Length: 126
Image 1 (cartoon, rainbow, N blue to C red):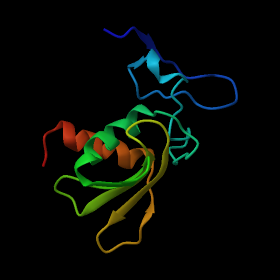
Image 2 (tube, rainbow, N blue to C red; image 1 turned 180 degrees about the vertical axis):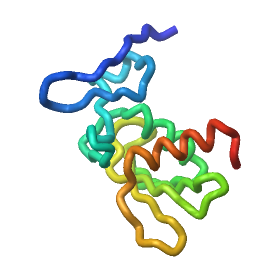
Image 3 (cartoon, rainbow, N blue to C red; image 1 turned 90 degrees about the horizontal axis):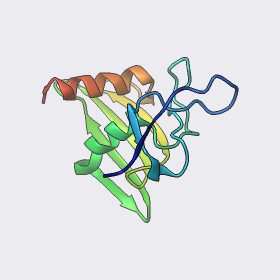
Image 4 (cartoon, helix red, strand yellow; image 1 turned 90 degrees about the vertical axis):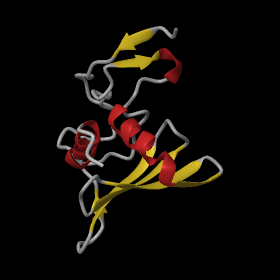
C-alpha cells in the first residue's frame, strides 16, 4: 500500500496547492497545484489537481490522443452541456478546460462547472 500524505493550501504567494485531494500519493513527485485560482477561474499552470483528475477519469471513454497529449469531451448527465479537456496523460497538467452548452458560445470552464459535473456523477445521474 502506498504511503499517503495530507495536502493543505499554501498561505504564501506562489502556486496554490490543490485542496481537492483528501490525500495524495507521494509518488506524484511534486505537490499538486490546483487548476483553479481563488476566484474560481481556470489556471492552466496546474499539476495533478484532484478535481480535474475526476474529470479526466470520466473522460477516458471519449478521449483522443497524440503522443502523451489528450483531448476529451465529457457530457454532463441530463444536461445540454459538455466539458472539453486538453491534458497531459491521465495525470499531470490540464492545459485547457472549456464548456460548451448547446446554443451558446464555447467558454473557459470555471471551478463551479467542474464541481457541478462531479456532483451530477456522484448522484448517479446519467
